[in-house]
Amino acid sequence: PAVGGEVGIEELPLRADLRGKSPYGAPQLDVAVRLNTNENPYPPPPELVADVTAAVGAAAAALNRYPDRDAVALRTDLAAYLGAATGVPLTVANLWAANGSNEILQQILQAFGGPGRTALGFEPSYSMHPIIAAGTRTEWLAAPRRADFSIDVDAAAALLRDRAPDVTFLTSPNNPTGQSLEPAELATLIEAAPGLVVVDEAYAEFSDRSSAITLLGTLGHKLLVSRTMSKAFAFAGGRLGYLAAAPAVVDALQLVRLPYHLSALTQAAARAALRHADATLGSVAALRAERERVVSALAAAGYDVVPSDANFVLFGRFADAPRAWRAFLARGVLIRDVGIAGRLRVTIGTPGENDAFLKVAADVARTEV
Ligand code: PMP
Image (cartoon, rainbow, N blue to C red):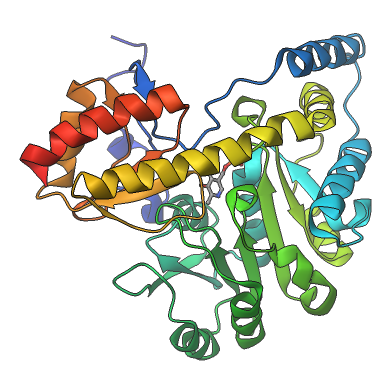
C-alpha cells in the first residue's frame, strides 16, 4: 500500500463544492485502435520532429533562466498563422497562449468568472467547461440543444438575454456532437449575450465555416476565441492552446496567469511546429474525406449518424451505449462513451484504423443497435 494510503478523500478538508465530483477521465488504454480523444492520427512528419528537437536543444542550453513570461515570439507566430487563415490582421497584442486550450479556458474563468458569477453552455458539449467552472467556483448554467443537437438560435438568444451569464461558451464545431455555427448565428448570440462569449474553436481547421475570429473587428468587446494545436496541428503532446481576442482581454488574462506558465521548451517546440503548419495541416483534407467515408459506411451499416464538421462522429442508436462501448473495446477498438444515451463518439483515424473500426462497427450493429 502507498504511504498515506489509509487517508480517504472524504477525510480531507476538501471544498464542499468539490466533494463527490469526478475528474476528467478519458480512459488511456493500450488498445490497437485508439479513436477516443480526437487527436490527429498522423504523427508529425520527420522534418518537424527534427526541427522541434533542434529548437528544444537550443532552448535547453538556457534552462537556468526563466522563459519569456509573455511568450512574445510564439504569440507573434500564432498571430501570423491565424491572420493568414482568417484574413483578420491580428497582432501579438491579440494573442495569448497557454498549456492547452484547457488552461486558456481556466484563465478566462479565473479572470471573468468566479464566486458570485455564472457561466453558461449548451449541452451536450465539451465536458471540461463545467469542470473548469467548478474549479473556479463559477456557477454553471446548463442550457439545452435541440433533440438533433443543433442550437435553436432564437431560443438561445432569448435565454442569454434572460439569464445574462457572465460568460457563455459556444463550442463550434461542438464536441461531442460535431455541428458548427455560422458566423451570422454566432453574431446573433454574441449580440444577445450581455456578458462575454467564448467561442471554443478547438476543431475549427476541420470545419467548412469561417471562424468567429472574423467577428472580432465588430464584437471584440465581448468575444473571445480559443484555439488549440492539439487537434489539426498534431501537437496534443506538446500542450499548446491559444486565444484570439481584443488586447484588453489579453491584459486581463495576464492578471491570473502564473508567472512563466509556458516553459521555454514548450515555446520553442510550438514555434518549430508552427513553421511546419502547411505539412501538418495537410492531413486535415485527408481526415475530412475519411470522415465522409466513415459517415456513409456507418449509415450503410444501419447506424444513425449526427452530421459532423469536425474530426469525430457521434453515432448510434445503441440499446445500451456503455455495453456497446465495451463490445468495441473487446474487439480491439477504443472509442468514447460521452454519456449521451444511445450514442458513442468515434475519432476519425488513418484509413487503416477507420477500416478496422468500420469492420467492428458492422459486427456490433448486429447485436447492439
Ligand atoms: N475544447 C474542446 C471543444 C476540446 O474538445 C478540447 C480537447 N478535447 C479542448 C478544448 C482542450 O484541448 P487542449 O487542452 O488539448 O487544447
